[in-house]
Image (tube, rainbow over all chains, first blue to last red; front, side, top):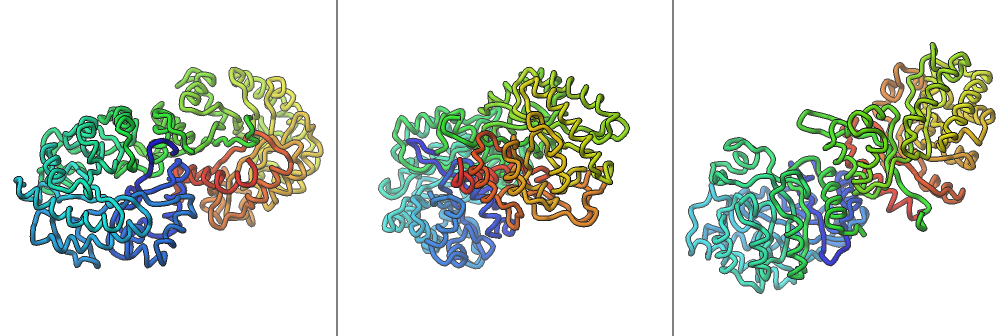
Amino acid sequence: MRDTLRWAYALNQWNVRLDVFVRHEDQQRALKTVSACGFDTIELASGTGRWDNISRPEVILLNHGSHAGFLDFLRRASVQGVSSMFWDPQAPAEEEEGYAFRSTANPADADAIVEWSKPFVDFVAGVGAEQLVVRPVGSAWMTPPLDGDGIKRIGDVWNRIGELTSASGVGLALHYDCLGAVHTAEELTALLDATDPASVGLALDTAEFTVGGIDPVTYYREHADRVTHIHLKDTRYADTGDEYRMPGAESTMLKGGAGRRIERWFYELGTEGGLVDVRAFVAALREHEYSGWVVVESDHGGNPAELAMLNSWYLQHELGIPKS
Amino acid sequence: MNQQNIKWSYMDHWRSNGPSGPVDQWHSHKTMSAFLKQIKATGFDAIDTFDFRIWQMYGDYGGPAKYQEMVQDNGLERIVNTFHAADYDVRNYAPHIPATHEYILEDFRVTMGRWSEIQLDNIIVMPATLYYDMEPVTEDKLKYTAECWNKVGEITAGFGVKLTCHHEFFCGIQSEADIETFYSYTDPQYVSLFVDTAQHCIAGVDPVALYNRHAHRVSGFHFKDTRNVATGDDHRHRPDSEIMAPTTGKWFYEMGTDQGLVDFAAMMTAVRDNGYRGWISVEHDKANKEGGDYSESTAISRWYAKNVLEEIYR
C-alpha cells in the first residue's frame, strides 16, 4: 500500500498453535499472500520455543543465521521489512523463561520482565523495525484491582523498558486490549500519564478499544500526541456485560465459552455491522499527520488469506489507497 | 490496453467455509461479493466463468448483464470468457458422431443468445467427448469433430465471440498427434486453441511447443501447474479422470508450486515473443483438495504473475 500513511500487515493470524506455522514454505506462502495484497511490511508476534521460528527472536536467528538472513527470507516473498513486533510478558514462555507466570502489576516481577524484554528489544532493532508493541498488563480477571499506585508501578516497568528501546533507537508502544486490567479510558490515560512520553507510546487497536468500550476515534483525537502505533481491525460487538471479568476470559469471553457465547469478536475491515468507524479513524490519522505504522490485523477471525484479501480490497476500494 | 500487453483474469473455481459448511461463491450474494473482492484485491482485473452458471445469473442476479454489473461494482472490468462444460453423451451430443451435430449446433445457437447481453472474448469447449467414449481415436473421428466445431465457430463468430478449444488430458483429443490432426481439419477463422498449461503437461504434451506451433490461433490461456504426468489408464476413468484417476489425488496447483512441471518462464517468454496481447486466465481448479485453500492459492498465483511473469512480459 502506497499512501501518506505507512501500512503493514500482522502475521499473528497464521500462527494459531505451536506446530502449524513452522515450515519455511508455509511461512513463505503467508508472506506471498500478504505481498499480493499490497503490503510489503509485516508485524511479528512473539512466541516461545523451538517451533516459534517466526516469533521468538532467538529461534528466528537460529533459523536464519542473522537479522540480515531473516530479512533475506522475507524478501524472497517480496516483503521488504518488519514494522514492529508484539510481545506479552504475561504470556508464559517455555524454554526461554522457565514457564514463569509474571505480571507487570507485581513489583517483584519487574526486574525479570525488564530482563526478558532484552531479546525483543535487540531483535526489533536488529531487523530495523520501529516499535516493540507490548501488552502492558495481564487480564483483569487475573489481576487484583488497580489503584493509582498500581498503575504507576506498571508504568515504572515500562519506563525502564522504554529506556532500553530508546537506547536501541526503537519505540515502545503499549497495546490496550479488551481483557486487560487497565480497562477504562481513565485507567488507560492514567497509565499513559505514568509513562515517559519521550520513550513510551500507545498502540491503539481500533477493535480492542471498541470491544472494551472506548471510542477509538475520540480517544485518538484526545491523545494523538501519545499514539505511536496502530492496529486496524473491526468488531461487531462491544463487551457490554463486563464479560472481561469472567474467569478465563480469554476462553469464556473471546472464544464464546460463556456469557453471550460470542465465538468471534474480530472482523475484517468493511464487515457488515462493524462497530469501528474505520473511515473516520483513518481520516483522524491523516488530520493529525500520524507518522507511525498502521498495521492491519485480522487477528483470529477466519481464513487468514481470505481476510487479508478482504482487508486489502477495503483499503483499495473504500479508502482509495493505491496498492503500489 | 493502456500500455499493458497482458491483463489477468481469474477462472472462477472457488470454495470457502461459511456458517453452513463448505460453499462456493454462488452460495449467496454475500459469498459472491467476498469472492470478487478477493480476486480484485490481489490484482486480477476480470473473471472467467462457466456456462452452467447462467441459470444462477438469471435466478439470483437477473441475467449475465446484471451479474456483470456486480462484478464491476467490486472493481473488476468484466467477464472475459465462459467455459461451455457440455455433458457429452454419445447418444445425442458427441462431436465425433455426425448424427449428433445438429443437436450441438442448436445448443450453441441458444447458448450464444443467452450470453448476447454481454460481450465475451471466448466461449471455451473441450472439443471431444471423454476419451473412453471416443476411442479408438481415428482420423475420421477427428475430421468429423473438426467439422462440428467449424460450424459452431461460425455461429459464435456471428455473436462476436471466438470458439476456442481446451484439451483436457482425459478428453478424446489430448495427444500431440491427435491435436495436430484435429487442427489441420479446423478453420483458423472459426476454431481457436486455448492453451491450458497443466492439462497439456499431464497429457505429456509440451505446452510451450504446442503454443509456438499454433500461436496465430491461440485465443487465451489457463495458467496453472501440475506435479504429475498421467500414466497408464489415468485418462480413462468415469466419470472424470481429474477426480477419479487412481494415481493422483490432486492434479492441479497454483503457478509457482514446488515441483511444478510447467515451465512458466518459457511459457511467458513465448507469449512475449509471439506478440500476444490480451487476457491470460489463471486457474487452479480443485485447489482445496488435500488441505489446499482457494484464497491462498489465488493470492500466491497472482504474486507469481507479478513477481516472476511480469518481469518477462507485461
